[in-house]
Length: 156
Image (tube, rainbow, N blue to C red):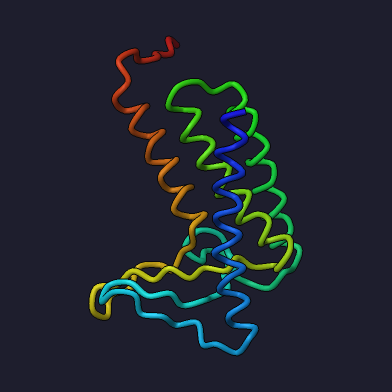
C-alpha cells in the first residue's frame, strides 16, 4: 500500500505541474517565468529521452523506444514489488517519475520539460518534476549499492 501511495503521489504531482504549465500556454500566456536568478520555468517539448537524446518525430523509432521504456517500467515494478527498506522508496520514486514521463510520451508524443537551472549563460538541461524523482531514486540506489556492508561476489 505504501508503495502505491508513493508512486501515485509522484505521478500526480508531476501531472499537475505539467498540466498547469500546458494550460497556461494554451491560454496564450508565455511560459517563461524567472523565479530566481538561477532558476526559471520555460516550457519545451522533449521528443527524445533523458537530456533530449534521440529527439525526433514520432516515427517507428520513437514508438520502439517508448515500448522499451514501458518494458523497463514493468521490470522496475517487479523489483518494487519485491523491494524492502530504502530500495522500496527509491524504486517507487523512479517508477512514479517514469510513469509520468511515459504517460506524456503516449499522450502528447513528447514530454513537457520546464525547469531551467542556470548560472549566467550556462544552462543545464531543462527537466521536469518526474525527472527529479527518477534522478533521486537512481542516485539513492547507487549509494546503497556503493555503501552496503555485505558485498556480493561472483566466483568464476
